[in-house]
Image (cartoon, rainbow over all chains, first blue to last red; front, side):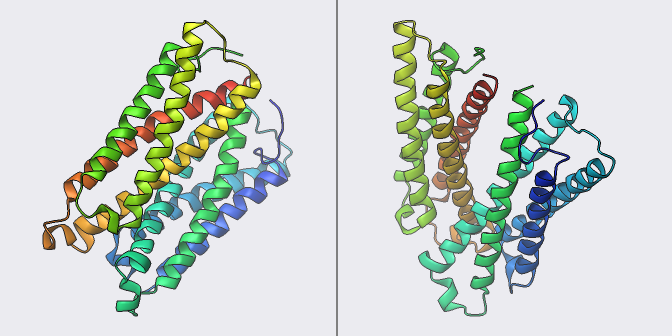
Length: 154
Length: 154
């Protein structure tokens, strides 16, 4: 199995996983601090999905640290298959959550003008949280592609 | 390059592409027939994205028919790289469109109760169109994975 940038058990892989955790955590934090998010299903789903993403990435980051410390090679097909499935599922859920929240926010800001009519809605924070969710998705997409590439090139 | 189910220039590949075209076209048709869709950015984006998907899949379906007729092998790395990029871009856009529209529809149906308050909104049609968009995404996701697998296993 080749070793490419972002493979499991490498420094670049650890960096990717840490980035995913940080952005997902930041997205949850900003959304939780926004007034009225709990009235909207899409925003609650964003928090759930980012929570799952953060947990998954944290688990893999710990595994990377362990592999780096004891210099163990994580490139075996069974382990990589597991990473591929987990990465793809969480990546799809993250993109779905980010897009559905973005759809609702665009509706609030542009289509029905809720943000101007109800200034107590924290539209700015919704937007920041969604941008952070998209950044998380970008990083997990890179991880997923690397893992799938590793698995396919066995 | 291996030949797997759904590869370009095979009957299964042609079936997948035709399915993508049909579902994307049906999704556009149902959305266009729904009252008031044009007031909402997410629904307009759904139509644009499904239109792009239908065009891309139609193009590849024609290529499959051509390859099947003259028994030409389409498994060369440059061509498959092109298919991979196109498939991934359209798949991501389709999922984004389906999810953002789904987010808005869930908001209308559950969170702000627009569907009951404004019975002239065709909420049922929005839902059918979104389900069709998700089916389109499912088929293009299968195509994308097959193409990426083909490219990685060269």
